[in-house]
Image (cartoon, rainbow over all chains, first blue to last red; front, side):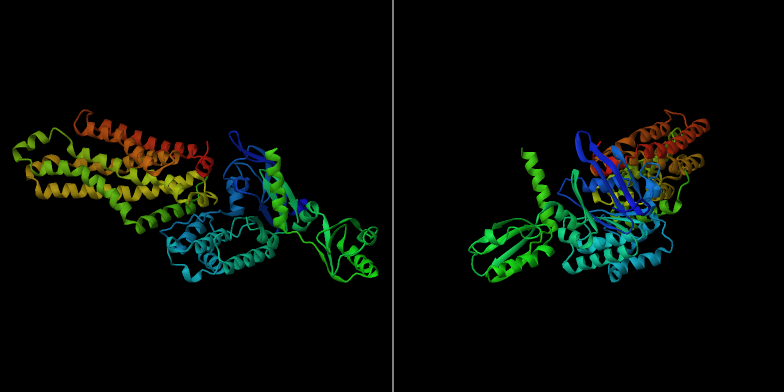
Length: 317
Length: 240
């Protein structure tokens, strides 16, 4: 968690309801300056509404927040919007206007100094310099997405909200966006990334939060894995062990074990690095031919699906 | 609170660029007043000089004040709901622009073509009457006070029509509904100008002054009320 002096976003028990419908509830988290923060959740979890609330487009029902150093209030709306930038899920470009005309309009709305230079830099960042005079309506979905990203870069924001920035992009263009996000992180820009691409979140984000109306979990991807899943070592031998119960118990850091096939054993451990060498020695001492000892890896997707599945189960019961 | 003219100008320029790229908008704005003036124009062109004297009793040119009330309805009613349907409203509202600035930009962008079209339609009407109507008929219809009234009241009526249209646009969910309601809302102004043209309401200096002041106040109020009732949350989320 970031210290109080370097907090770009601080959200405290924030909720938003539309009549009886809860969009998100009791959400609290902090995002540090220069951090890439992933905001994950299923459709309808309240991610976009959270972004809109923090972006002063809609008012929270309860709770409070600080955005780019300012308290989230109606009176601070203009000043907050000066310090942040939001790339919505839908590019929302003026289709009859050219790329440059779209960006020129937003450069003026943000009152950017040296607009021509900034527009050039933004186009260069998304590799669209040669398409500046094309009408946005004639661009592919992926190119429109890149124009929307260029538009979000224009004001040089302190906090950049990106809602599905790589949606519709081909792998090469998505890689460019990832590199761009990395570059922005190094320049100290705080990035609030909403995405459905879990491998993208895992690769880019310092920390992630999983929202399903309520905040389900928050932390570094590896922290979430450790919190949710037991660490395991999977041992495969050439032939089944004659007496596995005499080999595994008592090994340092071992919490339990089970067979997973004729010559495969899954060991629950506290620290794989500590236990793996001891397992190897014990197997060799027992005369086993070891084919492999591997730490089982859980992806962020496993974490995400586990949490969402748990919610679904709770809803059913 | 101080207005940021660069942000307002950004909206105006964007709108004007969209008009330039979409000639159909201006064509649609022009067709309605042209249709509106055809009947009185033809009637005047075929009026014999013996009827000229009876024409002096009415202020027929004031009838054309309905044009600036009608022309902006299409543009103004599209201004907010159109952006919303295109999905372009949310990105604009995420910028530092305030709602009063956004609406003023929209209004100014609709104002310029509306006033120009109204003046052009009026000028063509007068020119055709002067050129092709009987000279007695032309001099009975085209009179200096009515020309001055047209010059002064055209921008005032257009501005009022624009604020009504924008107000409707910000409260409706569909472009067609907004356009129909805005056209309907311009009818009272048309009724008043027609009543003046046919002397039901006397066309004198006092009435002109009263209407002028009332329209100025209404135009100012229109901006303030539309800004105050502009609800970002409803426009973005479709709720409330």
